[in-house]
Length: 150
Image 1 (cartoon, rainbow, N blue to C red):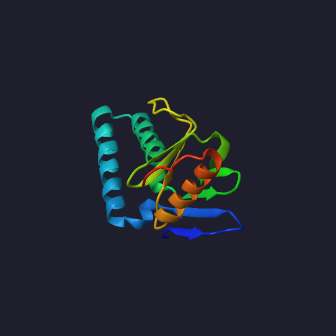
Image 2 (cartoon, rainbow, N blue to C red):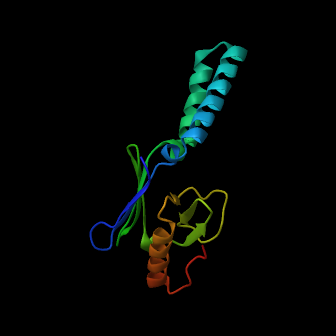
């Protein structure tokens, strides 16, 4: 499955990103390393429960890479859907946008904080410019401020 972009109903932008399917060699290497780590844990401890805990930690932390992520930018705000979970930030509560090479982090906090867990990290697929332009447009409309440089 490759990344795609759908300019849905008027004012709605839908972006689907699945990094693991775009990079099969990297994905295979990551899975081999995870398997070796879990195998090492079993060799050292001999307990399946520790292996299950390690696998759970890997699944939670690497979910954005392995699972398909759908991001919807509409007139209400930003919605991110991933395997049964959904997060939403309204445009009115958005305070900061921090771009990175692989995505953009949208936060409800004005200042950078290590405890900022309320935001959404939007991964870029092949649609980087379209997504960034939409976020710039919405931020400029709501706050009359310059949008983040990307």
